[in-house]
Each structure stands twice: as structure tokens, then as C-alpha cells.
Image (cartoon, rainbow, N blue to C red; front, side):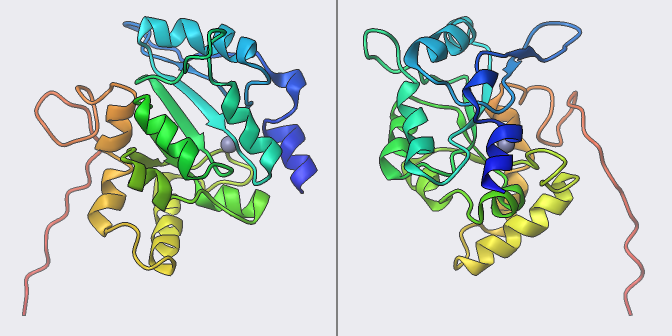
Length: 216
Ligand SMILES: [Zn+2]
């Protein structure tokens, strides 16, 4: 399972270097990097550098695994002069292999936040992000589905899983914090908070309105 996950979901070096632009009619608001850790600082700077320099969001599936080798990919997020590549537009999905020091590095360099996808993590790796650690470091945490083969099919499904995990871990998130993690937190991470993420005038939202049945 782990080998399959590595080959198909993002760790082989042969897949390194691919980027995909997120289509957007009015202006480019970000690049989406599917899976793949960077295999060297040069690879990281080549791919992340232009996006972060332009101030556009860059989303990567980072250190998606549980072993030391996977965690070591984190150290490639630096420039040739040794300074960090991490910056405000960098959104990091998974971070399963990371521990406190790496989350602190993300926070110190003002990374946008971490996206947590526990169902996919558990099915593929038998473990998920140590999600209390990024929160302790002060990083925003959003919730996502990862991808279709191992993830939930929508955010309502993932919310069920995150609620179960949160409760199992002693109540990591309040219900409100879980809702925040699928609404304004991710919107802010990628700079879309003036368009979506909260119910406000001139913002887009999908709403379900129901009439309360009469009481008594
Ligand atoms: Zn993933």
C-alpha cells in the first residue's frame, strides 16, 4: 500500500517538477502543485520561487508519508543561499511526516497554513498529521479531501472524519473551529477571502435555508 501510494500519489522523483496553473477567468490567483515533494533545493526554488516571488498562492502536498526520508523532503524548501523558500503564499497539504520543529519553521517563515485530510492519510499510511502541532505553532489549519481514490467525496464527509479524530484525541477542535476550517480559513490561506469563506454582502456562497418547524 505504501509503495502504491508513493508511486501513484506523489513521491517518485520522476514526477518532480510538474506544475499546473489553476484556471481563473479574471486573473491568476495561484498555482496548484499536485503531490510531489521537491527532490532538491534547486528543484524547489525552480518551482516555488516564481510563484512565491509573484505573491501568488502555491499549494503542495508536502511530506505525505510517515518515514524519515519523507520528512527530509522538507529540508529542500530553501534557496541556494540557504535561506528559506517558505513564505505567506505557500499552502502545505498533509505534512504527515512533520514534527514540531518543521511546523515551527513553517510558522516562523509565515507559511499560509496546513491542510488536513485525515481519511486519506489513514487509508494510505495508517496515520495522519500530528495536527495539534501546527496549531501550537500558530499555523492556520484547513480541512480538505485530498483526492478521490482514498479521500472523502466532499467536505461534509471529511468533516465527519475530522470530528471523530478530534474527539478521539480529546477535543482538538471545537465544532466552530471545524466549520472555520472549511470556510474562511482556507479562503484566507489562498487570498480568496474577499470572494468566499463567510456570509457577507458581495461574496459568493452556497446556502441552504430551512424553516424551523413550529415547536410544541
Ligand atoms: Zn495528497
